[in-house]
Image 1 (cartoon, one colour):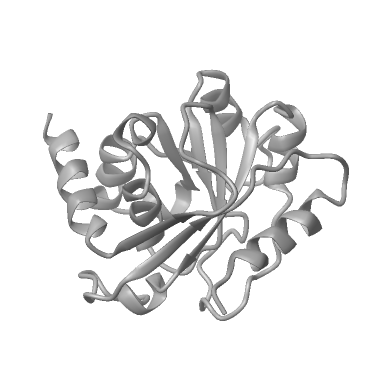
Image 2: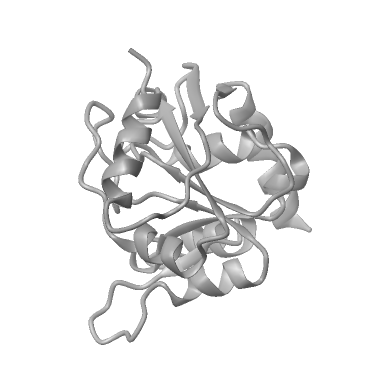
Length: 196
């Protein structure tokens, strides 16, 4: 109950900053993986705030277990408020992507940041292969590239409260894996959504 209210409150506040644009797709009821650039902790909230409520309720962010489980407040936010899918980066795991695969099998959509960490917002970092593997395991699920612009200015690293600056969230055309060149194609699609 409290977690649901907190999620609603955070999304309502962030919605004032979000300017969503659907260029190559429209928000529908189909399961998908939103693949976005990552520059701020505001990114997940901005993307969720851009979705209709019905989609928001079945869309879960994928995040690092080591980072989000480090402190009680972070743990509560990611596990209870946003129902995050936590991936461990420990050595010896047979399949670190298993929690994400399980969430997709349950019918959830995912928010995936393939850079693996937050960048400066000026340049897309190299994409990790996790999204390639998930796309190969679930080829029927749309991968929707999303470019989030302005979040690094609104909530820079080290800040807790966002500055009142508008952020654009641009949703591109759905993609499907066709081979090993998928990461390069996804990178091109993401960069093609970046505002000039």
